[in-house]
Image (cartoon, rainbow, N blue to C red; front, top):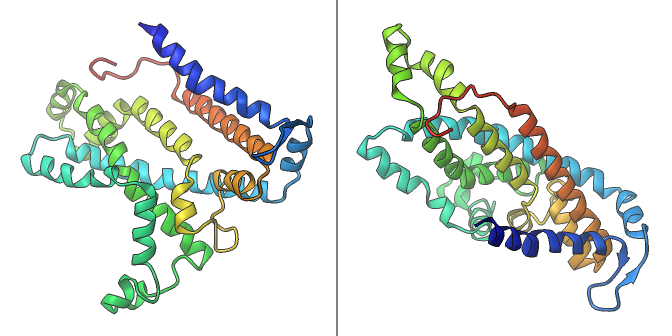
Length: 280
């Protein structure tokens, strides 16, 4: 049963990755002959002053979006884990952002936040009527808000399923001991969600490395280079400057960063068997 999955993974995961690694040691404009050039593309990439800034922007987006998404997703997941009918109705409405493409979301927010024709101008709300995407700090804030708005529902779904797997006997025992809801949340729910938090955080961290379409449509990396993340820098090198070698080198860096962070989060999660989740 594992053989088809392994073959699929090798064809569409390993082979393209090896191709990108090979391209990073060549000089190619995307059309002409591919010329092996040793470490030329790597030297050009590592000496590019835009690389450290793109790495900083990538890690900033990663950290801020994780800090917003994780607590919100846990609280909403716990809220939606109950069996109240109206909460199931709210859950259906809440997951609508998952059905929308990042490009469509970016176009919509760009129109809503336009200082001349957007929501602030239309409603006459002064604090909304400012150049949200023309200021570096505000643009980063808007980007984090949109990322959180789009992906919190997905992670809420993960936490909702995990909370429902926690044995009710643990809450019943704590009630007998006099524990309230807040005490139950911090003493039972959060510890039991340890491995779910690690899984959700890994998805958030690795997923944030691939943010490209949202940033490209919303700010194109601006103002200046305030929101130019590593994935956008890779696109600009490869498809705007026609430098496939340096673009492939940046892609390899993205893979190495994602792999390193995933292994780090797995190590932070430990290998204990503290969780009492049913089926865990």
